[in-house]
Length: 122
Image: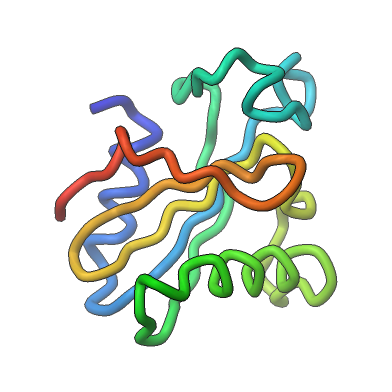
């Protein structure tokens, strides 16, 4: 397990319920703000840093798109007081802890792309 994913798993171990984390590339990285297709469909995890984590209430996984859109809106329009990172944008990753599993979603040009191959059990 790489250090970025390990950091997410460690952070989520502290939450009893559902939670989320935001992973971002440094602004100077040439893949920042680029779509999944533009980066060749491969995530270089070692360049990502976890920049924020938050709590989610209970939700049905079938509603994940609504949850992701709510997170996107919150981190673009109404930043939480403790949020110090840039607004959520293309190339960022949202990690979701749901039912003792971590799911990863790439913020793409339109919507989010599920990175199913990276699911982790907790």
